[in-house]
Structures are given as structure tokens and as C-alpha cells.
Length: 126
Image 1 (tube, rainbow, N blue to C red):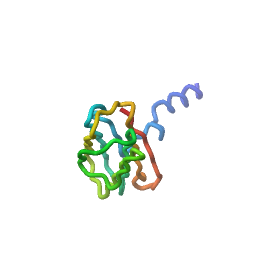
Image 2: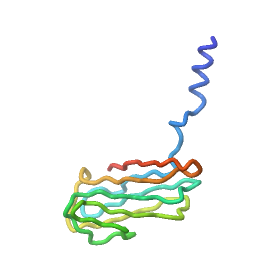
Image 3: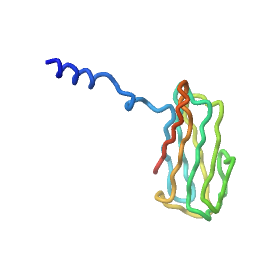
Image 4: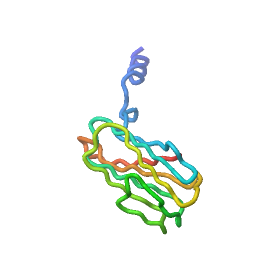
């Protein structure tokens, strides 16, 4: 009976693995010449967020909103650093000089947990 009680109690009390991430991302559009990455920030927001977008090397940016702080065509990377974030949804839109496939892109979100300062990195796939 006591064992049953502890098993039941462990199912009811949420574990840290079930905690909601303060930042999450998803692709709104992930193929063709234009891709859009949306990331959502919850309260309390992290102090800063680094977003790194990976794409096939050699592609050229026609436009990006916002413009990345770093862009390396040869490596196929772009990087943004966001500071003073507020809770809400943000979108990064990139137009390339030629179409790409969803399999050719991914993004990385890096930040420190508010309060604990624990470094977190998550990958966003299409």
C-alpha cells in the first residue's frame, strides 16, 4: 500500500524534466527562397538570447529581418544576439538567392535560465 502511494504521488508531482522552457522555437516556413523562424519567450525572460541559423554553404542572403550580427556564407551560418527581451513571440525572416530544402536548415537557441543562470541550448528543426 505504501509503495502504491509513492508511485501515485510521483505521477502527480511534476518533475523538473516536465518544466516549461523559457524560450522555444519553430519554423513557420522552412523551404523555398524564404524561411521564417519564430521563437517564443516566456516570463521571466532570459537576459539575452543567441539565435544561430544554419543553412547550406554558399547561399547568399537577399534580405533578413532583423539583419544578423554575423553572417558567414562559406560556413552557412548567421547569428543574432537579442538583449532585454520581453515575453512574447519574435520572428526572424530570411530570403535567400535560391531555394533551399527543409532538410538543409536548423537553428540553435542559446540562453541562461532566469534566476539559476544554467546555460541551455536547444535545436530547432523544421
